[in-house]
Image (cartoon, rainbow, N blue to C red; front, side):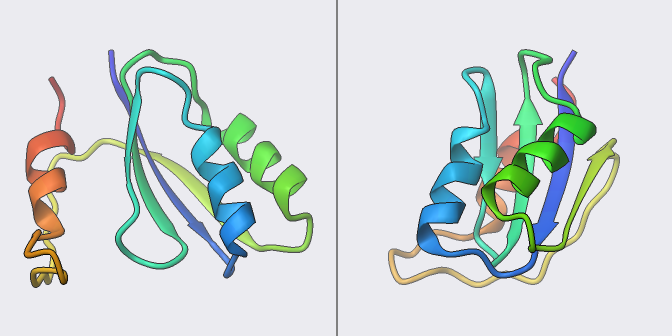
Length: 99
């Protein structure tokens, strides 16, 4: 069964953000259109909130962060296309739901 997480952090450097993305193991898909905020869908049941927060602490020990495991029953977003014409809610519409 898929697990869903939201992750919010203090601002991180580009290198620290890259390290956060590396936490998302195979079977994980993620969305990161807003600064310091990720939506994560773990299809392989490898992640949990405690391990994610510990890993973020090892990346930046002074950054504040919140990791929530959520059940995406409903959502709403204010969106507009990016420079490439992609709409940020397209990924959410396709992926942020139970399979």
